[in-house]
Image (cartoon, rainbow, N blue to C red; front, side):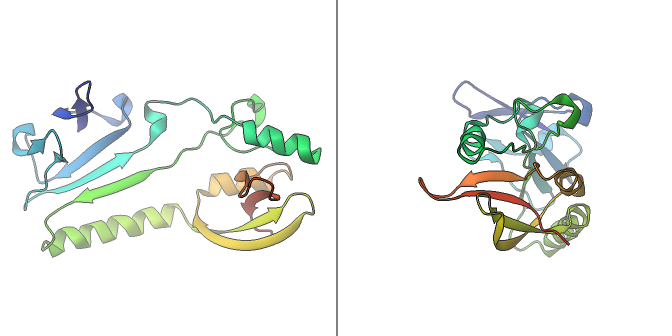
Length: 190
């Protein structure tokens, strides 16, 4: 289902859609309804949970806004350190190494006491986790090339392979404090 909102971003109605036709920021998968009229909506609260339905909202901004990331901070890091860095999805990346990425969000609504729906969501979470394995990422001080620490995050293996194919590729290049060190984040070396 695709939510249709008014000019004040209030939910007006739902429309059926297919994966090939998604052109909005998020869609709803609703199990337990066979007709649009069986789905309760409220302009303020969106789609309302019903006892016989499992409602999952899936959001990814690339469906509507596929524009690449802006990279002002990345260019500042390059200038300060005299190095070249690439992060997936950046605007000025050469086409031969371009990699589009985006964050995916899932939200679900169901009656609190419905253990069947809770179990179904747990199963969905396990399936997603199998597709996005936990990856050990290292945060590196880019001026010294010394690791700062390690964090575990679920990441697509395609992203890890892309980063590991060249020393100038990073998941992110950030500065946590105004005059702090430039930090690169990438899959930890084995």
